[in-house]
Length: 344
Image 1 (tube, rainbow, N blue to C red):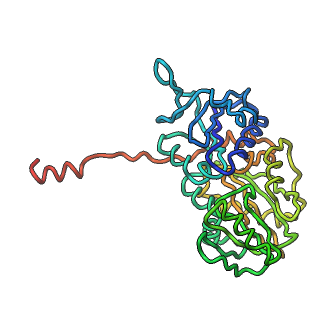
Image 2: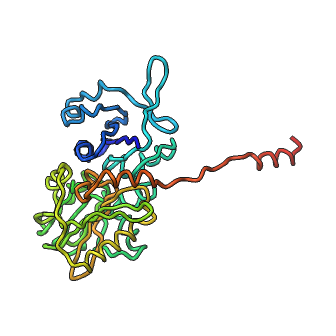
């Protein structure tokens, strides 16, 4: 398999995507092709030796080869015509907008490019936390109670304090606040509305047990270990940023076989069939013996490689079992029949 990793994008999580790509490079058993998508939607071919933070922060990537999309893959333009990159599968590693909202999925589908990542429908339902709640409810997966506020509408919060406030379409804990006193509320709402016109408000439960599980389905489910993330009150941006850049493994959560089994069963219900072709991470809460879905991460930071014993094998397995779209054959029988009926 000849893998290419697409990263960057026009997103508040642009830098997190760069960190993820650099980290994944260090843990794969082979060297993939790296394709950077800048915030103006230009694609660049990045040499593996230049995969470091300075290449992007300094703007040095702008001197590298431009790429364009064509049927079946990416092309490099040249004096004597374009040359197609020798890749077989693309890994979508663009966090947030462009990557997780379905934009790149639509492009890859349109140009018939094989890719690892959420498809359009999966992106729509997991990128927006409000829609994720609706999806979970439709498949019998429990979530915390919530309310939704929109920019420009009344900022009356009905949920009793303390609450946690989140932009509906953003990850990495950006724009997230915990509000314990009424005087903190307006500032927290303003902060969230800086990033999105829709925000989600949930009750904040201190000391809740939180567990993460990543995985995919090929001919069978491949599931990671269950992790209990180390956090203070919640996993803030700084903690998640450090998590994305780590290259070592983590310790398995010390939980009962029964709880582990329920978490895995809930993950499988969420995943199949909506997320076929992607590696996702689900974050769960355990409260008074009940398991609740917190969030779906359709393109997790650093692809949650640290939860697997053999990450390269997992990526290879997904690449070998991607969902296929049936080719639609177009004919003109209907138009011909009309023309014949009119004698034309």
